Image 1 (cartoon, rainbow, N blue to C red):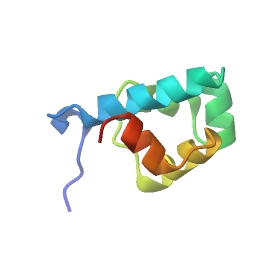
Image 2: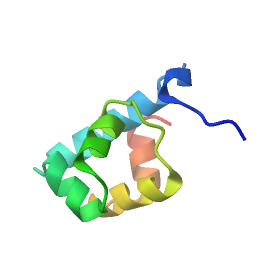
Image 3: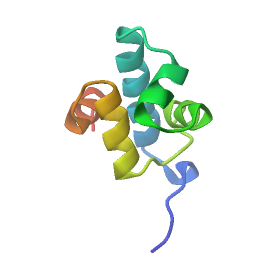
Image 4: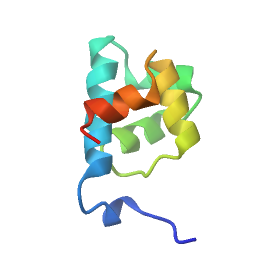
Length: 81
């Protein structure tokens, strides 16, 4: 199976999802570092996800959503996906 990179995100889905994560994080007055700690991922990885540079895995999406006290579907809906 071919790995999908952020460069092949022609419709901007990763950028849209990243923007939804940023908005949810900021609405909770949470820093990238706090989100990373709660989600148990690297802070730099959070930054790449938020900028749409990384195609996050389903498990990472679950962790990020849980850290934001949201369902993954909430993040997807907020991003228009």
